[in-house]
Image 1 (cartoon, rainbow, N blue to C red):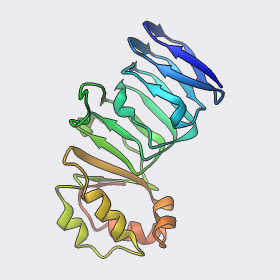
Image 2 (image 1 turned 180 degrees about the vertical axis):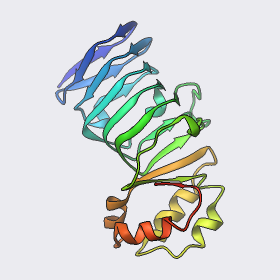
Image 3 (image 1 turned 180 degrees about the horizontal axis):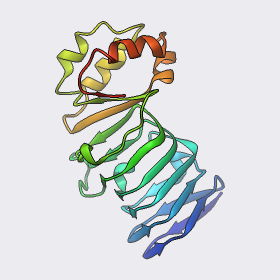
Image 4 (image 1 turned 135 degrees about the horizontal axis):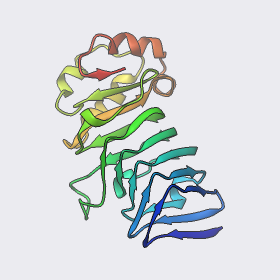
Length: 201
């Protein structure tokens, strides 16, 4: 396993491929502009130290699980590929709350599951459509969401994201994965979502 450090530079219009054989550090003092970033590494082998990614295309070739995009500043980026349990934005409880941010990013070609958007301007994000779905203001709407008749064991799933921190502005899920975990079908989930305001389908 090699180590790749990309730091202390501004890089423009480059194609950067992060292979599975490396532990990669992006940052500190790194700005990528108009670059294509191909990620083939496991989440544990990609370490973000406040890099700035501006107008980049980020192609996730190997699913990233529980990955803290909150450790990067993302502006005008386009994401493709599968991500599960990832956070985007800025957490106030972080020891360095200015460590990350997100604005004007496009996730329409990404597959997001159990991903949270925190402390950001959601109106400037392009979120994926069905079979992904995004619940807006899950914490503030806890009682409304729990009042619905959810299929299978999905109520447990809903309880978990409505008990989140108040900075959570939205949570995005991939319906087929949710259905499998909760002993139901995407169609049954969709039937409930269609009755709810504040959901992006």
